[in-house]
Length: 255
Image 1: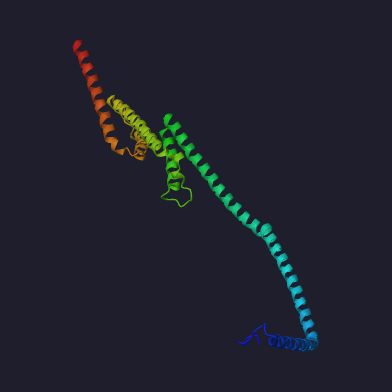
Image 2: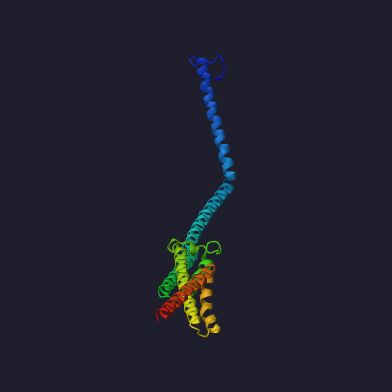
């Protein structure tokens, strides 16, 4: 009726039709309501049963969510109190291992510096044999802890606190070599002077006296200076001998 192209709400006929239709609509609605009530009555038992099941399911879901939340809190507490503490213990063990390594490194650096100090004291005191032994210990330590021959995380030989050891080593080695050269020159001069005085030459005593000096010069890398030391001792001995002969001749001539 409302979608009819000739629909005109101002027409009395149309109003009459609308009112008639409204009565029919009320009747139809009442009939529909009766059918709905009848159908709802038939299905009310299953409907309320389903509703009850839905409510139970919702209640169980809420309870399950509550248990899940409690479990999460418990797991969090376990993680905080046990798992995290375990990780902290592992980290602390690693830190302790590192600190022990650093402590050992500090002690070994102290030992190296102490050895150099003792060696310097022996050099200053003229104990070249003892000084060479100390320097050998330093060389062994340096080889053990050098960056090229050691896989440790902290190559001690590369630390700045020990950077002066190579120069000190060279200086002390040079000083020891000079002491040995002086001692050997004095020994040779003394022996040559006694030979000139017709004193019997003791080969075994000479060997026992000169051998440590030759070994020390070799350890200092100064073996090439032996020929010069011998030449100088012989030259000085010849000069002294010539001077004594000349003085003796002059005294004889003056008489």
